[in-house]
Length: 347
Image 1: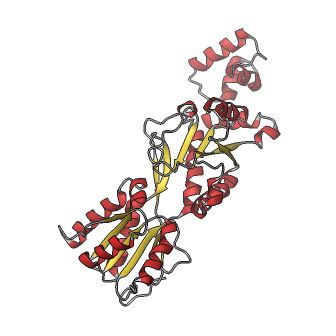
Image 2 (image 1 turned 180 degrees about the horizontal axis):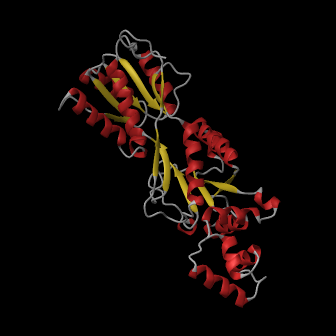
Image 3 (image 1 turned 90 degrees about the vertical axis):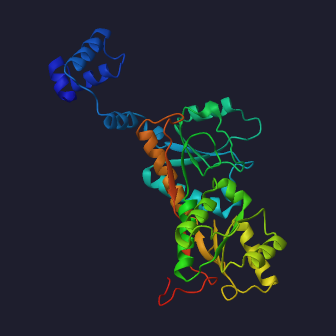
């Protein structure tokens, strides 16, 4: 049963039947009721995809061209990606994928002066925005504003504690992949140095991966004590290296700490990989001497847009009862701080 069949049964034109089913005042109440009764009797139901498409096409062209997602900043600046290369790469990935799908991104600052949640909601509604992309928050365990919880929402990372659809780095797999790569090169005593901020923002996935990998690959009780640091704490790190004697250091920290690690090793004449191997997991490694895993920011940005577009297509608005998390694995960067694999060349 399709619309044309229903129109023949009702002895009306397809356009009149369509108007009646949409509740248009262009047809009489009696006609609307009769068409709806016939639709129910004959088991007619509209194709949701066609209804959505036709609703979009009925809008004026200038309105259709305004279809966009709002990119919400919970940071203290309206465009946090302008001050962060890491976030800039994510935002570029968002823009590229949104353009391919026919959407425009509109940055909106939730913490703008004199901005209230109710006013922000009015701005979104006035512009016909249904989908929100949250860049996450610099604060861990940040709640998403309740007055905005009826839109389709996707957030980046794990900092927003509200159960939302989200895209994040695959912290667990990246740690396992780095350990496997070091092991393939003959390292047998890995030690983990972990930034406290990264540990918290990664929901402790990295330390879980390290401990599990050591028990599974090396054997029970062979994991070294994990060294947690706020920054590059030279004294504690050198003491830990002397006491634990790792043959490879797995260093997980913010990318602004990576140059400090390099300077600390040089200052203390620790040569990698001659004295100890070093593998780094961070947002950015390109342009450094370190081997390790770098997050795949362009893909994260693209997946955020794809996930939000899918939520809107499925009419999935509000706080989800079953939030979806999509995790993006990083990519290996071949530096100069690990010895090469035996009898092989690493690209």
